[in-house]
Amino acid sequence: MERKLRRLEDTMIVCGYGVFIFGVWNFVKVLMYIIFDEEGMRHIFEMMDFDYEFRYYAYVVMIFICCIDLWIRYYVKKSAWKDAIRERRKLPVYIILAAAIAAVSIFSLQQYLFTDSFRFAIADSIASVLIEATSLIITLQLVIAAVWSRILRKKLS
Image 1 (cartoon, one colour):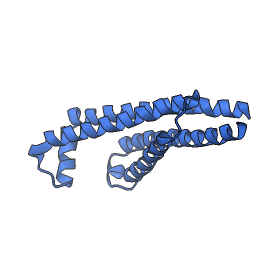
Image 2 (cartoon, rainbow, N blue to C red; image 1 turned 180 degrees about the vertical axis):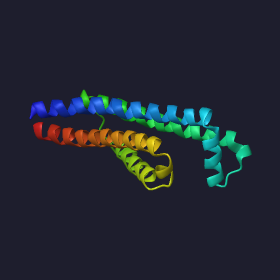
Image 3 (spheres, rainbow, N blue to C red; image 1 turned 90 degrees about the vertical axis):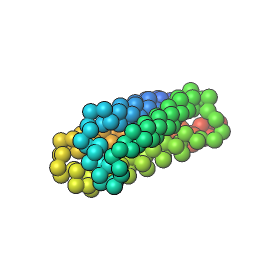
Image 4 (cartoon, one colour; image 1 turned 60 degrees about the horizontal axis):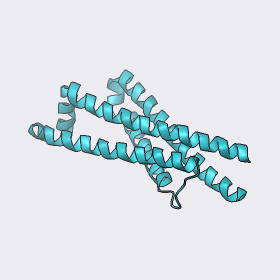
């Protein structure tokens, strides 16, 4: 039982770092779209019926949202690490946040799979689906390991 708990705690540390790294990737991806894909951004604004002249405001909002996402992922990583080394808090807020990240990832995965852009840019879409699916699996592993480690700790004490 102790070995299983230690294995779950190791999983929490590794998956916590994975959740954060995928957040960094999302931030870099958004920056790359803003900087390098002017035509793609113009197409997105046209689809949303958004005036292209106000794109800089939209860019600031997008970067702000990515910063919030990155901060939440950093909090999840740090809290999972602290929980794994048994400096845990009474309220497992990071588990709830990680489950919310997983839910958003599921929604994002559905958007990749069931839109027209998947058929037109198949190589980019397949890469995006694989990255998003990997992020989802890592986040779900973190949630499962965190919940099971709490259950095992209660049994052992």
